[in-house]
Image (cartoon, rainbow over all chains, first blue to last red; front, top):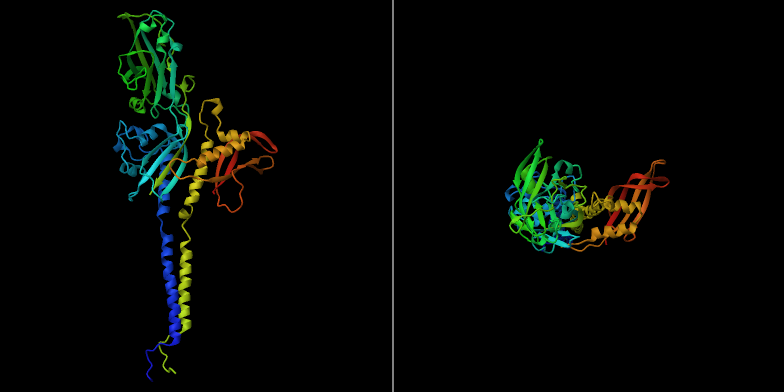
Length: 346
Length: 170
């Protein structure tokens, strides 16, 4: 045959085979290349890191009054830090509101409420935020069960504990026996409390709950043989504000805990031995006290067999109010305790 | 014998084409291993944040009024050379695990101070959880701490020292 156009030469077959082999080998590498381009774990780590930073280094928004004292719809951004100057120091009130599913302002719902206020972004991330209170061995969390393969960050923090005062009533009884109604005054001197410049240790009634426990009331009665039969009545708890030298009644406090009751009782109420007062930040926030001193006056009546009973009792009208501050030994100061925040995002 | 060889391919050309593809693929593979800075250092950043958090928490007094607790743990540890306490507390912070995965973090801690008279910087080895062999991928966390110690040969006075911790995962 003389017309050999279109036939393949050995040269061509060898060259084409080499080309095909190389081509197939390169194609086989493509899936491996794409594996390296999968960025989901990196993305989730970054979202977890960002969420961790917002939670432990930011006090959230609105800042004043703080978000934890606001209705759900008013909260723009979560943040658990006491202030922007104290990263990694978390507020107990903010922590409680963040993890609580029962709140007077309404509970936040996973995932939508949390996604909009701390996770952010358009992608519908699932997540789990947990806080381990090391000292109390308490683990609190919000979110889903963590699956395999997720972005993660862990932040070591401290929680600012709440201050409280335990007042042993016999130490504050009046010297005069000829009295039937008694008043005990507690001073919250806002300007004095601001002398502590570090928010991590500051007693700030508008940010942190304060608690006053008054114990052993019956031991203040002069005649201890008659003491068991004396009726002690807490008649009212009035709150006064001293503004521009004028002392004015601003509100009453109606939710004291009496004796061992786990629920509050509105005065007037009969007391056996103990009274506990828990003042939420909202209580002081409403007063809008600023630097003005606040006086909390507890009034007691003593009766025996239907008639007034004259005795010594818890009464500091003859001396000075009980000062809820940094120097009074009965006041337990805010204390920092170890904790850890973990954020998992997937 | 073929007289007309127009349009024919030769072995050397196929070999050259294959080689070009392989080299291209090699370059692409290498190119994808160059991550952006943010991506590459996510793991390092997590470890560094953890170390910084631990040092920061160790340098915060737990109470502002009780005389025993006015100074931070870290200050007390350095002033009294209680380096074993540092090891225990630091590992407590870094290896504490709640609902997340377990951790096996190792560290090597030291601090540096400056002798004002000679302007020399002295380095003091504090403690480590395991010896560095050189093969570890470490990250560094630091914290300036105010302490009342000497920086030999200078006498004791209040000064800032730089605590430096190298961390790595086993």
